[in-house]
Length: 324
Image (cartoon, rainbow, N blue to C red; front, side):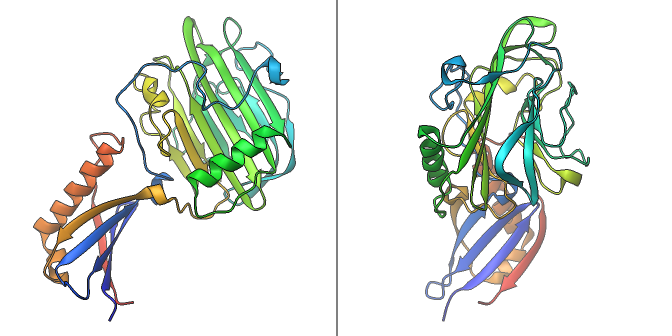
């Protein structure tokens, strides 16, 4: 007889437990961070990494287009060779806004970021949305690739992070903010990159971070969709003092890089799983308040180790007993 399955929903997290049909006393607990897109793997170092190897090629040597020096400026529309699928919406174009974010329907001069979820009628990708100013310092580059080594690199990266897929990149779009200053703070330098990768029915985003200066300006990094049906905020990215750690945080064990599948399907990344071994005598033990609190505490400790804020709180929503 197969073992019984127990499913516990903790806020937006899911825990799957299997009670061995042989031992009857052991539960193996797995936590899948589907609500986060993937697990975090932050380190303690805050030393900026200038021109890191995680960045895809950028700059005049690789024939990038450069946004004009303009406070709150933007690029013209860039047409995609095939639609970019973003959580069910198919986009044929994109705009690179100087203030650190990408929009699909029109350019934007907004310098104070929305707080995700914003519940607005637009799709947004925010590498680091804040009040940036490329007039005095820094450059904003973008380029689209339909062949060459960049596609090979993108294919390799995605298959590494999403190992259950067989993916081949058909085009790549990069937008890079290189040593751009914050508005009215010309001594500051901030460098990051957003990479859109498309192939077949799959689409992905990479967010790469190098040296990020602290700021008192409002900030936000992540993505948001129409009516905020899907959204994600990189932990710590909405605090101007903690964004300096973006170049060491990750959800794919590559410091400074965050990777997301955004075509709207599930994101089954093997690295999303945390394993815990617990002992219980019966299913009824799972309804015991002390045991529930013990599980929540163990899960919380593992989430913090993986880079989530230390003040994260988990609440039990429901327990479902499943007999496969």
